[in-house]
Length: 137
Image 1 (cartoon, rainbow, N blue to C red):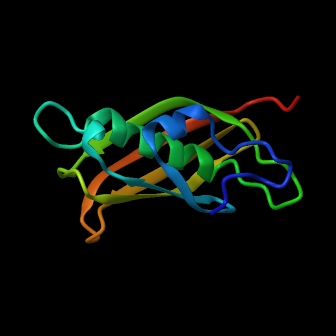
Image 2: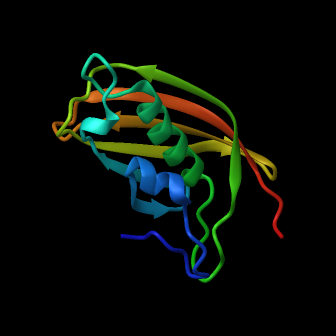
């Protein structure tokens, strides 16, 4: 599973570990983030917390615009806006896949769209974001 680019800089920070999502696949203009839903992801009504869904969408969309082929280091970006739609419940035990695609952009900003599906292929969420590349050090 690709969690480190060729320059040994982590693809995502400690928050990914806290939430438990993983990078499943990553290529030019595309990223897949997965999550095994467990009890601590639930809201008080027993379904996936909306903040967890938003995190999956934000992370997958952001990564979709930051890929660079090795040996180049991945790009960095920050979220400028994020729009989410919660389309169905996800329960503990579900395996969610957030698949994002870069849909446009330029030198400083990019746009991405994401769909989140459960292990049965049921669409449970979707979203779109606008991201700004961070300056290289």
